Length: 81
Figure (tube, rainbow, N blue to C red):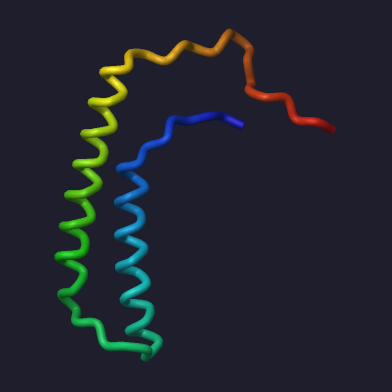
């Protein structure tokens, strides 16, 4: 399995887009009424928080320095079996 770095900005953006989807799914299911324009402030706030989170994460990672590279041929932890 390939490893990747954790990106909390994308997590925040995904959470807000998921919340928007849940709001409209509840409206479509008849559980509550959601105005058509409700997604605009939700997306703007979510993207703003995601950008701030991403910028903070990037500045913290730059301050710490580069991570050591994996040795050539290293595929990660061995799986039993």
